[in-house]
Every structure is written in C-alpha cells, then in structure tokens.
Image (cartoon, rainbow, N blue to C red; front, side, top):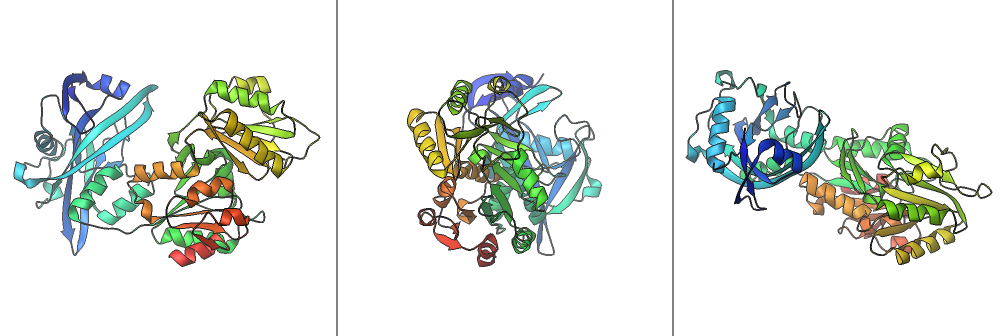
Length: 440
C-alpha cells in the first residue's frame, strides 16, 4: 500500500499520513510532483507530453504533463520528482537539473467505476531543460503509451478550450510559463444570451460570424446566462454558436463547451420547497420552473395568465414529484407583469436574506443560492483556468447582468437595455459584433 503525508495549504506535512485510496475517497490534502520537459526548436518553445496508459482509471489515453506522481510519505518533493522522471521516462537527472517553478492546487471530484474520487493536491512543479531524444527514452509501459513534443502555445490553447485529447492541468502549465517568462495573450468574452447575443428574438448572422472570428483568433467565448444547461445548449446548437464554456443558472453552474460540469451550487432543499409553495399561493404567478442543475421542470400555476418566458415548455413532473426532486440549482417564477416580477424579487430577498439571491429578469424572478451571481461564476471560471480577470470582457442587458458590469473595467451593455441598467456598465454597444470589433 502507498502512504502519503497529509499536508497543510502550503504543502507542509502535518506529521500525519494516509493510505492512497483513503486520501482519494475523502479528498484529504496531500502532495504530488509534476515535471515539465521542455526544449526550443527554431524559436518555438515545446513541451514533452506523455500519453497516459489506456489502462488508467482516470483520463486513459489522454496527453498529460511530461512526468508526474505522488510524493510518498517521508519523501521530499525534489526527491520524488527525480524518481518519477527516471521511472516513467528513464531520464537520470541530477538535482541541480530540475528547476523549481512553484506550486499550485488541484481539487476536483469525479466518479470512477461507480465510486467517488476526490482529488485534493498541492503540486510541486519542476522544469527539466536538458537535451532529450525521445527515441532513446525508456518509458514505463504500465503508466504511459508514448511521448510526443507539442508546441507550448498549442497546449495552452488546448487547456483553455478543454480539448478532449489533452488533460494537462492548466495550473501547472501556468507555473511553467511563468518560470520560462512566456506570455501568450488571450482574451475572454463572457456574455449574457437573452437580450444580448439573442435580441429581437434572433441572433444575426453578423453576430454569429463575429463570435467565430473571436474564437478563431485564439480567444475564449463564454455564455453567462440565467438559463439551464439543457436550455442554453439547445439555443447554442440552434444558432450555431460554439462557446468554450457555459456559466448557467445565473452563476450557479459551470460547464465546458462539451458539457463537462465544473461547478455545481444548490439551494437548500427545504427552502426550495418553501419557495415552490409560495409560488403556488401568492397570486399573479403564471408558472414556476425548477432547474436541477441541467434539466428544467415547469409547473403551471394559473392557466388564465400568459406566460412570457416559458409558453412552450411542457410540464413533465407533478408538483409533488418536483418537491421530492432533492436537488434545486435555480427556481424561476414567471409573473404576469414586469412590475410583479420586481416586487417578488424584493420580497424573496427580504424574507430569505441569508440563503437566497433573487434577480429580476423582465417577467421572471430568478432565484439562486446566496452568494451566487453571474460574476461569481465567472470569477470561479477564471480561477479554474488561472485566467487574468483583467483580460475578461463582459456583456449584458438586464438587472441580473449588473454583477457582470462590476466585474472589471471592460464591461459592456447593449444599447437597447433600460437606461438605468446601461449606467451600470463602462461601455455601451449596439450588439456583440460591435463589442468584438472594438476588442479584436
């Protein structure tokens, strides 16, 4: 059995140890060492990536950091890095040939073979810049399939855009880039959808082409919306928009462009049921929609009223079934007027100030966990990608976009928005195409 040193937030051992499977079952903080093998070819910086064995439980067959492994109990990071480099690649390095580039944190949860896997690591990053001929490497066949040289810029772009064949942790790549003093300029647009990208019930071809040009230039495009993932992915497909990430539920959920969940936030179940009961009894409510983090479920409250937001969403669960769902990422109450929606938001924020945040979004009240907003979701995504917040541009049109307008100094509001909302942003543009043209 393998044992690890339990460590603190700085990577310093606490004096306690834990068996490997227990560390991953319970998310106990421990240490690993990552080694980057690099070279220069005709002025291009390249990194050596290993293809993980197809027999691996996690990320089989994907390209990963040059060499990496857990630091065993009682070992030092450099000692472990030297051993991993020799065992996995057959490189007999000396201590002075490994250059310390810093540390970063890895924390995520997955499920492998029906069991939860909680990784929680402080990673010590080293750089190896000595000549390497990959044809002469003695690779550890049990751990990897092969090795390949990649341009550093390609790997960085692949990490930011969640390319499916590469699983390099972007934190390690950023540590390497900082050590090498390599800068690869990138920008990110985080845009609302309804009323911003989609306005007057359509997305123009000019706007779609501008988004394509933005991404082709190597930049990131993020849809930051109050919609569920189920709903916004349908819209993206309908209008042929390919975002790199989705921030949904007004910041409560984050997904990669391919649909992998990166963040999940839920309302307390008892509070959620209270809100559903209230929606059924307060009056002026057309319907309410409960979002479980991906799917939407609609309950019609008053068939005599016109539903401005969800006229075509058919109910698929009964009220009792919905109240027993157990997971509630967002509740949207659809009102008969804009004024009643605003009044409902004020009441919810007054009655549940410590646990809920409600936003007026035209005819509806969007209700999410306290502390969640489109800006908090965006900030979490930037932390996940180690992306500089100063390089983010935001775009919106309504009250629930106001947190985005306070994100930094690169905030834009569409000129068709209400004047009071426009005042919250730093800039005003007529459409997203104009925003992109100003920033490309």
